[in-house]
Image 1 (cartoon, rainbow, N blue to C red):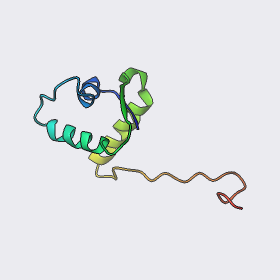
Image 2 (image 1 turned 60 degrees about the vertical axis):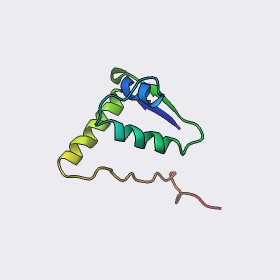
Image 3 (image 1 turned 120 degrees about the vertical axis):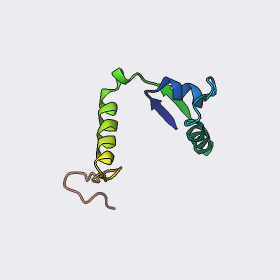
Image 4 (image 1 turned 45 degrees about the horizontal axis):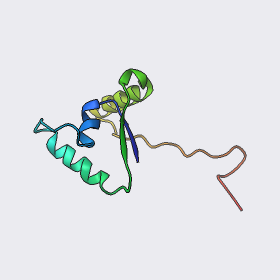
Length: 89
């Protein structure tokens, strides 16, 4: 699993290079480490927000949608190849 995060703090904490000082982050850090433990391999890489404007925009749209009382997730339509029903024999 490859994670690309705009928070250098979180990346460094996940890798164990920086301590988790904020008491509010400690349970979230513990949960993240537990979930990551289920993967044979994982990596976390810092990507500055300025270099990933599209992901930042989508994340903000999702936060705004939840704040407005909407769903946290939006179902994605399944893509079907032109002229087909999505497969066959």
